[in-house]
Image (cartoon, rainbow, N blue to C red; front, side, top):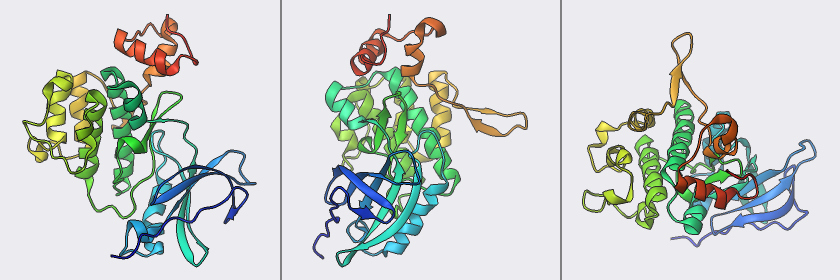
Length: 299
């Protein structure tokens, strides 16, 4: 097995193509993400550098670029906006860099570590927002391949946003669907087994007491405990979830075409509770006040 290739490190002030490095946001052995600026744009940008040899040894940088560029055409409020994908040569090596919008907030993993299980009312919204984003991705003939809690941010506005897709994912639609279910189970239960790729759910391992009853049957199919054929797409999953929760994710326009409806964040709804006459449960109210104390106060 070849030695691991670490991502190139850039110091503040360095240039990667047309971008100027401002600071390092995060990094690991596979990639590094920087806050960058560009003279032609008046907003900050996130630049993620990836060593394609580390992630996909059999693929060339150009193959990785072509795979990621497909996501530039996916524009959805709950999927990070991919602005540019290109190759950069430096220090006798090459990297793929992905320029995206900046997403401010906490990852779902961070929130569970900080607060434990997330109230079901908020999980309902998060999962339906993510499902709507996955629908938009799949309509482009793509699979995201990285629907994991650490790759999903709850923004400061209280909306869920799915971040970077996996390069060269061949897992297919059921992988995204299964991990949407794993993420839901993890948020509802704070059980770390849910996000362990080596852990396989079965009827014994699925703790029904950890999740509300309305979620149970939907997650049984999503986590492949029931026949996966019974839950064959994200669209079907959302329909089953809407049926269980009494909610609406999609509707039809005047021409009979299906369209995604905006899925309001509980943060926005309950920040305006006095005017909307919508009030959270005590568990969600307490969670929201802890998370968003400085943004608003719920009476």
